[in-house]
Amino acid sequence: MSTYTIVTGANGEIGHSLLEKLHAAGRTIIAIDLNPLHEHHAAMCTHVFSGHMGDVTNHELYNSLEQFDLDEVYHLAALLSTSAERNPELAQKVNVGGTLNLLELARKTGKRMQRPVKFLFPSTIAIYGFPSLTEKNRAGAVTEDEYTLGRTMYGINKLYCEQLGRYYDELYMRLAPTKEHGWVDFRGVRFPGLISAFTVPTGGTSDYAPEMLHAAAQGKSYSCFVREDAQIPFMAMPDGVDALMNLAAAPKENLTRHIYNIAAFAPTAAQIAGQVKSLFPDADITFAPDVNRQAIVDSWCADVNDNAARNDWGWNANYGFEECFRDYLAPNIKQRYA
Ligand code: AKB
Image 1 (cartoon, helix red, strand yellow):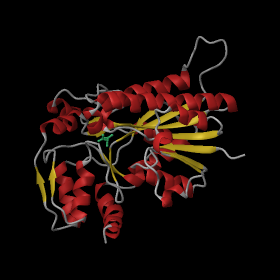
Image 2 (cartoon, rainbow, N blue to C red):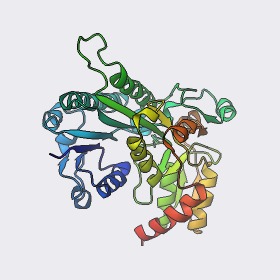
Image 3 (cartoon, helix red, strand yellow):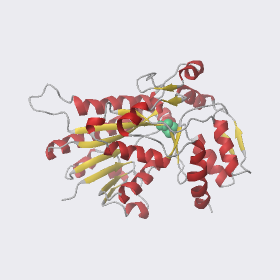
Image 4 (cartoon, rainbow, N blue to C red):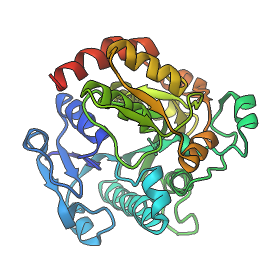
C-alpha cells in the first residue's frame, strides 16, 4: 500500500518547486490548495484537493485525509506578512488554525500507523523583531533564540506554530495514561525572502526583490517600497526547497533542535537592484519607501546565523548572491519571459 506525502499550499511559489522535486524523488503526493493546480502540477499528484476542500481550515478536508497513510506533511499554506497585517483575524485562522489541524491529522495518523509522521514547517525570519534599526544593525547575524519578538501578525503566528510543533512532538497530552506524544516528528526552517525565476510571490514584505526582478525581465518599471539600504536575508528558491527536503531526510538523532535558521546571502535593496540591472541594463528601478512596510523590514534581522543547520544536517546553500543571479535567475527568467 502507498504511503503519501501531503503538500498544503501546493499552488504557491514554494509549492510548485517542491512538487517538482518530490515528484522527481518518486513520492506519492496529495496536493492541497485553495486554487486548482495547473494540469502540469496536478499530473504529479495522485490526489488534488482544491476550492472549499483545499482550505486548511475546513474540517471536511480532514475527514477525507484520515484514510491515508502518511510519511510526510509539508505544510506551506499561510498568509504572508503583508496580507496577515491587513487581516490579522484571517491570518490567525489560517496560519495557526490550519497548522493545528494539520498537526492533529499527523498525530492521529502517526498513532494509527504506530510510527511518527514527519511534519515539515516553513517558518520565517519574520519571527525576529528589532525595536530599532540601530539594534538590528548592531545584532548582525542572529541565532535561533535571540530577538524572537516578532512585530507582525505573521511572525507571531509562525513563532507560536514553531512552539506548537515542538509540543506535539515532545509533550502532547503528557498527563494521559497512554503515550500521546511523538507521533509527529516536527522539523522546520526559518526561511529568508525567497527569489524564484518562475513565480512572483503575493502578500509578503520581502516581495520587493522578486518584484523588482520580474518587472525588469518584462521591461516594466518598478517602484521599490523599501529604502535602498534596507537589508534582510534572501535565498534562491531551489536552495529553499532543498533545505526542506534535506531536513526531512536527516536522521532524527542528529537533530539538536526543531527549528533551524538557514542562510544564503543578505544584500541591501540597492545591491539587489544592482544585480537586476546587470542582467537587464535597461531596468527602470526607483525607490519610494512605504513607511509601514519599511518598518516591517527594519524589524526583521539583517542576517541569520545558521551554524546549527550546518552542523546537524549539513546545510549549505548552493547559490551565493552572485551565483543566484548568474547561474539560476539569469538563464531561467530570460527563458520564462522570452
Ligand atoms: C514575507 O515577506 O512575508 C515572507 C517571509 C519573509 O517569510 N516572504
